[in-house]
Picture 1: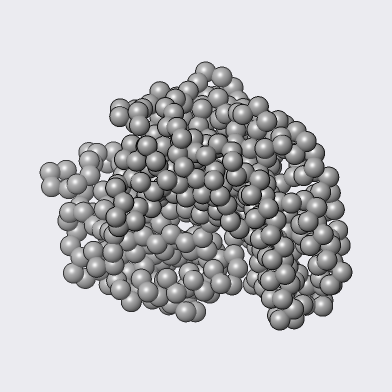
Picture 2: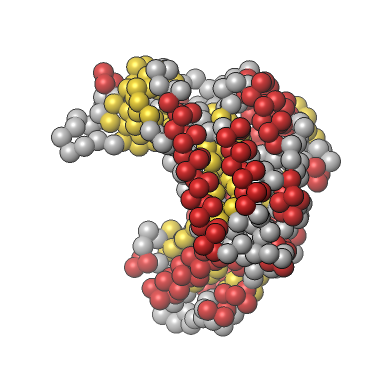
Length: 502
């Protein structure tokens, strides 16, 4: 879906030289990957990326449209960019609902949906044309009559998850998100992702593996595997095979995990539904092939509420978690939950708290239910009053925080691998004295951190290094310790240039 509206005049923008495009990326890691693809194509076609409104000829806003606060944040960002530059192209999930954008901001230049790199670039070219003269232009051109006429691609052509792998990253060099599928086949009552992003479309395993290989060759040490439903990877393509380094690899999560694990980087699984074959993934974790970490969106524990939510595996989570931990005792499990779902009784909320106590999840996030436009849950009877939702959320987080505190305290005294994300030096410290990193059980941006003294390794540890650290203390969400070793990182992928060393 792409929609063109009355765009601002381009008077004063000459059709010569390079153009600068500002970029705002909102929403989840899956949207971040879409932003990386658009930025990559911008650079390929000769556009520069502006680092401020002042230097931008136009702005692209990649929006989120999942929940009401995210919609408002997206609309606010669009308005700010319009006020600053007057030329804004909107893309992303909220772009699938153009009427909502136009109601607030009728002067946007164009609106496209999610994962619409071709559509976005078409509007960029129209808004900010770059000279293509073979003598004075910044891009190579073919002889007259040799370049095919460009047409607007069909929507489904841009929805496939394997359009291309981005070469520009919005994450630090040492970690990256790798999207293995787009869209979702579930019909959860509170969610409109299938309406925004369509049914699931899986990438070929070979494409995912070649992208991962390239990232690790360039110095990436941690890969976050993402999609809407990672466990369902390959279902839509019947697990078809594709080529990777002379072999045929199935588009199945277990086959993919095996091959990714052979590359020697940290491999972290996100958005994993508790399907039976996930047991095999946990076995790979126990063998040290991929990180012992699962991000599993459970949402609730009451069988009746889970059925109202239309969630798979209703009522079986605790048995599944116990089985996984039996396979891999080191497993870290994070999850998210919704409290105050329509019809949730005090007794059913109590079931959720009891589940938390029994499951002892390592990392937990929770949200008070709020209506999402077009979601089926809006029509359910017996909505929970807002004050009750907030009171339940507070009680939930109190239990979750206590469990997190207890789980982290169990790590004190251990020596653990930590990947370094940033420096944390005080004013009087020598450079590189204090560090902030993450264990294998912590994903960036959503989980805890490890605050380290570099000790004898002050000034020797770089951002992106994986060090060994002795854990000396803990609190509700974070760990504290000191570096005791700085081993050399040796992946099973040839390194490019200076990326091979520390």
